[in-house]
Image 1 (cartoon, protein in one colour):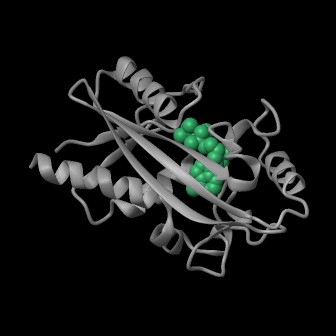
Image 2: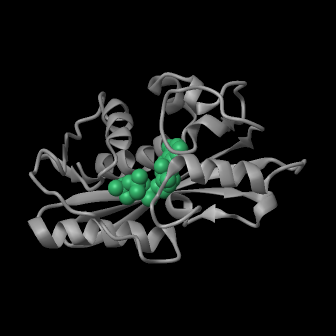
Image 3: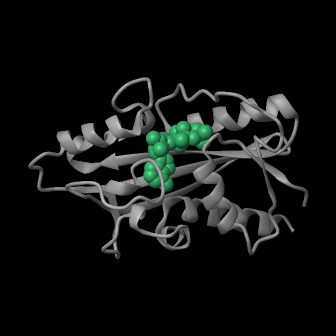
Length: 194
Ligand code: ITT
């Protein structure tokens, strides 16, 4: 199997996925490596549609097989917000500091801090679309902890851990994460193709 493009502009996702695929036959090419500079749109109300849009844009551009993913943080006490809008929770400028501050503010004095991350991968493979999901349950902390990772990692502690994702090395985040679970489905799909 030849290399496959991972259609993302998020280098932290690339680092996590590269580690997760280390022991598999799947070799990924990043948009950077393909010389593609594009702000991929995420205009829809579901992770599935946004993931498919990202993969289709890159497939149309290159004619090559590729996959993308869309991820959201779903908080119980906020009726699932920030959800699909996680990147733009506090506004269009996509400031993670503002997003996290707004999240902590909206959860102020809230006792139920349960939340989950969900990742949907869309694979465009020989002109067909395939979807793979991963969920990681956990809770939102009262304040930020740790400096590793990205996005909401500093306020999210996965079930089964006493550390936030931002207090973990990538390998440890990869034990629990939504992305790891979705990617396991993707690798199982490729195993079946052989
Ligand atoms: P691409 O669309 O280029 O893949 P992105 O950073 O825009 O990259 P998403 O739309 O999937 O990715 O992410 C939505 C938001 O959720 C965004 O603010 C991310 O920082 C955050 N996020 C995604 N995965 C995360 C993770 O594993 N841990 C913490 N935050 C995450």
